[in-house]
Every structure is written in structure tokens, then in C-alpha cells.
Length: 575
Image (cartoon, rainbow, N blue to C red; front, side, top):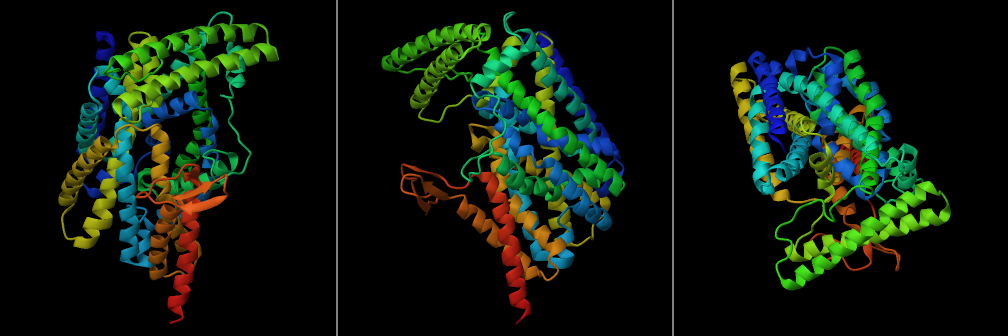
């Protein structure tokens, strides 16, 4: 980056840190530090909900998915409007009536302390693990910018996020989220417009869509019902409903946002803002990834967007790499010519020629990635580097710093939100509850800041252990799917199963978690029609693939918790 971009980036990040920390001076009580005295406007809480979920993961992971695959990932979000209506109808009034600090306090009155602590503990584990991924996401960008090892950049972003979050409190988190959301949308819209205006004169927007459609990149809906398929309409509407209802309705990271509002009406408005805006925003971001693919049809693109050093260590590897890269360059040129021919003469013949040229180029690209993986003896992928590469090489000077600053600021908005939620659950559900409310407000505020620092350190270490992943955003949803369904099941027992007891809820919760981990290891062999549970300590035989993809783990967890919880409650009551 140029000195202008560095100046913009440093100024923007400096303002973000200042803006977040200056709110901390008003957080003299535990309610002020964790809930902003329940005084936040609904629109600010709503934008904070969106910013918390979006973050740098949205920039990097979602565009990368659309680039290397298609737009079917949008189906994951089809359930959000239904989930938000469900939460507004049943959970928001319940939480508002209780005037609680966390989503898990309400469990103790009905199900006892053990169930409350177990559920809160599952939240701490799931979000603690996911937070490592959220820290890793912007670290990819920083690594590309500075040329530093990924581990170093993880430490840098982890330390910055933890430092300013410890001081700011929830008011600082929400206030910065609003500004960060605006910068995030500017970056997305500007990048989309830049791609559009830099297409060749012979290629208009309709032509770009035609080329993308020819490669099935515009596929957004899959009506086939298949539990082993990650993304289809059924998993997006049914399975993802349980994920989204639990995430927005029982996850403290999100619940804490609308607990900061002053009424049921305003809490509902904050959630409905996400219900209306999230799916269109996600669709637009995926379309941006598709447009990136079309952009690089007509512009030079590396075989791998992820720089790897050293590329080749022996003469044999060097010769192999030179051969692959030559094939890639020739295939890239041929694809560009085939694309121009396809848009000028729209007929099945030119369209198929373009599809074949694209396939040949991608085969060369995959060969290069495979060679790098063989050299490094590790999985090598560049999904998370595609959009950062575009920013650094094609965005004008000055705007680069602002967009990259927006990515980092968006990342901070997720990191600080999750740190604040982890702190709230740690202090309210564990420390304060087990020790008794015997300390002063100043003590709890000081303890909250100390716990925030602790969670920041844990998350940073988690990010260091994580390493590379093919898709950041997929990994976040996968981690959540191990926990969210079971946690939602406990709240279903609380609200609608009157005969449920604390023992039933606790046994159901444990059973739900065990069933999720078991079904996650269920594999299927299409050739022999054989199902088999294969656990991590066993090698997966050839021909076997996951029988149930991760989104379906959410309804499995919920159903098992409710069924087992009900049966155990009945059995113990009859004794």
C-alpha cells in the first residue's frame, strides 16, 4: 500500500479505537458496562446485530465462496426472517419481562442452577472457539498487506481488539458498530461499482451475468432434498431456521444487543431491521464474489491468490511449477478469447467453448494449488485471499486504506461484541452467581475488564492454533451447529413443555450434544448404500462421505433435547 493508504488506515483505526474507548468513562456500574443502562436506540442495536454477524468474515469468506463455487450459500440465510419473527413473538417479551443480564439467567428459576451453568458453559466454549476464527479472518488481510507470518498478524489484531474492548464496554461496542457498518457497506458497493466499470467495453453487466450463468455461478437455489448437501432450499429454510433462531434468540452475543434497548417494541424493531436487510445484503455480497470471477476473466490473475514461499525447493518441483504456470497462462488467455466470443455470438457452440476453456484453466489452477500443497506438506487454499488481492491490486490509492480499514473495523466489531458477551456470561452466570452478590459495583466492573482481557488472550491463542481453513464463514457456522441446536432445545423445554424438569432439561442437553457429535461422524457409501459411524480416531475409508451436513445438526440437537428432556421429566415425576 502507498503512504496515503497507510495514513487513511491508521487514522481510521485510531478513530475506531478512540471512539470505542471513550464510552468506557460512563460505565461505572455493571449494568452500564454490560448493558449501557438499557438506553440504546433500536436502530443502533439493530445495526450492531448486523455488524456483529457480518464483520470481516463477510468480506473475505463469503466473496471467496461465491468465487470458487456459486451463490447457493445465500440459502443459509433464507430462514432469518422466519427466525426473527419467532424470536420477536416469543423470546423478546420473555427476556424483557425478566430484565435479565444474560439469556441463561432465566433457566435457573425453572430448571435449576446446574442447567443454567451447563448452558452458559456451552455458550462460553462455542463462542470462545468461534472467536478464534473471527480474529483469524482479518489476520489474513493483514498478513497479505504487511508480508508478515500469519501468526504475527493474529497476535497484532488480537491484542488491539482486546485492549480497546476491555476499556469501552457495550456502549462503546454499539456506537462503533454503527460507524463500522456504514464503512463496510461503502466498501462493498464501491468494489462492486469498480468491477462493473472496469469490464471491457464489449462486455456490459448483462454479458457478465451471461458468462457467470454459463458457468453455473449464479445458482442460488437448489430444490433437491439431500441431507448430505451443504446448501439447498430445505437446509436453508428448515435446518438453518434452528441455527438462526438459536443464534439470534439464545446466543448472548446477539441477545445482549436488544437487551440494551428500553422496551419490547424497540427490541423487536432492532431484530426486524436484520430480518429485512440480511438476506439482500448477503445476496449482494455473493454477487460481488461472482462479479470478481468475471472480472478476472478479463484481467490478469495469479494461479494462486495466496502467495507461498518458498514455492519450489527442488529442480523437479521448479520444472513442474514452470510447466503448470505456462499451461495456466495459456489457458487464461484462451478463456478470455472464448468469453468475448461467447458474449458477441450468443449460441450454444460459443457458450460451450467458453465453459470448456474455463474448465481447462481451473484444472491448471488446481494443479498449481496441489503442487504447493505437496511442497509444503499441508492443505493450501486461497479462498480467503481472493478479495484482499483484488483490493490491493485494483482499488485506487486512498480508497484501499479506507476499504481495508473497514474490513479491520468490521472485524473489531465482531471481536469486541463477542468478548463483551463472553465477559457478561462469565461474570453474571458464573462468578457473581456462585460467589453471591456480595461485592461492590466497582469490583464487578473491574472484574469484567479483567475477564475481557482473559478471553481476548484465549481467543488469540485459539486463532494461532487454527491455522488455515478453506472457508472462514463456513467454519464459524460449523462450530455453531455443534452447539446451537441443543441450546435452543433447552429454551423450547422452558417455554412450551410445562412438564419439563431440571433433571430432564440437563439430561436432554447432554444427550443433544452427544447426538450432534455422533451424527456429525455418520458417513455414507453411495456405492454400497452403507451407513457407518466413523469417529476422529479412525480413518475414513475410500468411498465414504458425510451423510448429514452441518446445518442439519441443529434440528437434530433440538429434537433430541426436547424428546429426551420430556421423557426423563415424565420418568422422574412418576417415581
